[in-house]
Amino acid sequence: MSQEIATIRVTRYRPEKDSQPFFQEYKVPYRHDMVVLDALNYIKAELDGSLTYRWSCRMGVCGSCGANIDGEPKLTCASFLHEFKDRTITVEPMSHFPVIKDLVVDMEDFMEKLVKIKPWIIRKKDSLVEEGEYRQSSKELDRYQQFSSCINCMLCYAACPIYGLNEKFLGPAATALAYRYIEDSRDQGKDIRFPIVHEIEGVWECTLVGECSVVCPKGVDPMLAIQRTKILGATNAIKSILMPRGGR
Amino acid sequence: MKMETHKVAKLHAILWGIFSLGGMIAAFLLPVMIYMTAIAYPFGLWPFSRENPACPSCLTLVRDPSLLVTGHLLGALFVFVTIAGSLFHGIFRFQSALTEVGLLKYRRALEAVGYFIIFVGIIVLAYYLIAWYLNGTIT
Image (tube, rainbow over all chains, first blue to last red):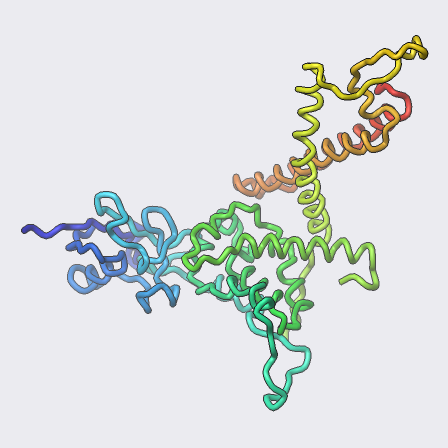
């Protein structure tokens, strides 16, 4: 019985050698349970050791293996070959990020944005361990839980046309994470985060395209977080005019 | 240590609030207005009536869409909120569209022109509605 074959077209780019990216095609033995990452690993191990890409957990948890697969931002470890017509698949680096090599993109900008929104619990005064834990009801947890599932895979940035046009835009994942802490009943850092997310290049650049929520592999809805953050911003702005001393 | 400074876009936040609220109100009221003026009135389903001014003693029923506003503050407000809300929603969405199509370079200038047209439109609308409300005519 002849072995079935999948065709993988991969973007190759070595800045020290190539003036621009180009596609290289590989034939990979196909199995029904194979994901795109398996195919890339096969290429690296058996066909071309110079192919460069990021990966780690192979189970959709670490968020490091994102790529544009047939034009859509996806995790390579969560995209089965059998889902693609004729088993011919094009794998490109994620859009909107500078390419370091082949499928590896520069994450610097995203990392800066992530740190900028201070993704940790801020307390006005830290309590001693002996004073016990910061308690939270399940209702309070529900307010932010879905936004805490972000794995920082950056697929939402690759899908966001606004980020593609304006890299200063804070973007979906960073805003979702900021909102996650804004809604956390244990957090007291709203006054610090609000000015960051409510800059013109914070949430206000978003035009509600919604692709960020469509491509998220963990079911996070960054578009909802951005909309809710906008409502908070508008409410605070109106309050500050109506109640200059009492409003935020 | 370097101090972080962030410029909160307060005006934009307020404009977005009006866009959001105005858009929602317009989305609810516009279909009602379209029904009243484009379906109910031409097909004789208009619910309003009045006495014939030429013959106050005669009880003549006249279908007239101007009765929606003439002497009715709520009616005038309904027309104002529906049209002004739609206009403002439109210009704000137009501003977003400029971003989406990548016209970032010309966005500020086009936005300024758009907002100017819309605000002139809203002022003219308010003027005519007040005249209509008070005098029963828009001329």
